Length: 359
Image 1 (spheres, rainbow, N blue to C red):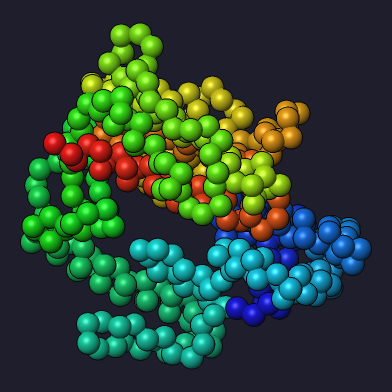
Image 2: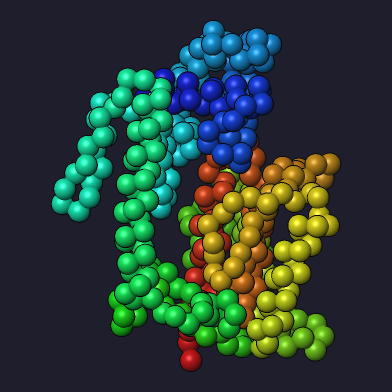
């Protein structure tokens, strides 16, 4: 996608937010893109004028074109801005699924089936287009059922999934050798971790991506009371982001009794969903056996705390993980914040699995 197309798409998202219509990229991504466009346009006189016109003219095509022209220049001058916007606004795609965008249909539509191809000819009428989309979906549905249904019939395990009920932890394909059955995942049973082992679940500075510095060194200690749990903590700061105010905080709790962890996770999930209006659930890739993510905004606090934060909780076997990432600040980094937070969370989840796979 060229700079002009990218700018037009980004301004289109902001316009959708202004008019209360669907952004087409999802609520979280749409809000992030809209804020970045506002921030970037607001940084120059031309941009502020274009933004004012866009807001005052109810996102008219003329106002959108003017704002897109200014944003195009910003994108051409800032590769990082281009990359951040591209992550959310490039060609439509859906992991593990099919996305049909009528505006992008050109000519015939080929659908690969094994070594052959089924061609659907693009109709000229709206009714024909609807029929075409339905036909493609029917064929693709049959293909998905054939692949997934067939594999379930031929190779499925009839026993219920034990990854949750037994408190087991799962390792992805990047975390170790595959099992003898050829699966890309292996399951390990949870076990009690010592204080030292719990501390080691928390990433050390050398395990972190470049740019991070120690804010509070790794520490391990028994949890107060007769809980049978140990904890590990660490804080890291990134002086290169958000004027040096970006921090990631890890807290890991490992218990002898898996039920203690599963109950604690369930209580935390319920608390966020019912009694903490400040936190908003956001979509993030699953980490460990079960996980959820939220965002919240701090205002009126110290400068190093004010802004948007991302918090992710996960249960990995007999280990509970709580990670806080923020404040994310404004600008292009806001668009990358969810991806970066997810990477830092996967880092500690993988270590939690590895620690419990050791006999």
